[in-house]
Amino acid sequence: MTPLWWNIGLTVVYAIFVSVGSSQVHVRVKRKPGDRPKPGQCLSFNRGGTSKVHFYACCNNVNDTDKSCDGRTYQRGSSTSYCGSGGADKGKGVIRAEFACGGCPGQGSVANKCKPIPIFDLPGTCWLFTKCFKKYCKKRYSAQSSGLNMQVVDPSSTSMPDTCYNTVCDPGETTANCPVDCCFKLNPSKCTWVTNGTCIPEYCDTPSCSVNGAVGLTVTKDASSIGVLVLGVLALFLYV
View 1 (cartoon, rainbow, N blue to C red):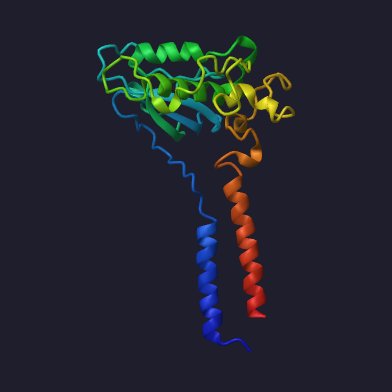
View 2: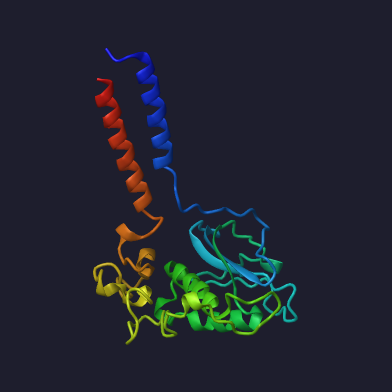
């Protein structure tokens, strides 16, 4: 018969492994209503808005000389305003990233760059616009200081071609530097711009181009479940 101390110790170890194995690496921080980006910065959100699944971005330009875009919501697929003065979040979304975007002139330029053609300007395409907005803002203005509208190139994002997000896998674009346009080459049944007239799945904007490789979507959960199952069987075997 197994000693009591051994059973207790094994139970403690098992509980620790379960706790560690089930923890999520990619933690999303939920902002309180009214929170806003730092001056000169923007925040992108998801799981917000009236639908609780909407993607959008808010920017804080209150310290800039040009405040013409104060309170503007950068989004597609919706006309509801989710940003207040200074970029205050009114959509109760979950923060995705913080970045600079050149003040009102830069934000307007990037928003026009990311504006989809009418056929793709559908309610389900909001995540495409927001990711495009974030990536081009980072590419052009990520090293920018508050209040400055000069263009500053971020070395970490210059590999993304300027033609990215135009719905075509152009020469020079690959699944690594522009997956949103090229993932259909690796996953043609899912990652295409013309499936039933709707947008491609969100994981098609990751270099893996596969739902099984989309960081933070399924891998962590699946690995945790397997780890818990294996540990449970092991504990039961040792106990018996």
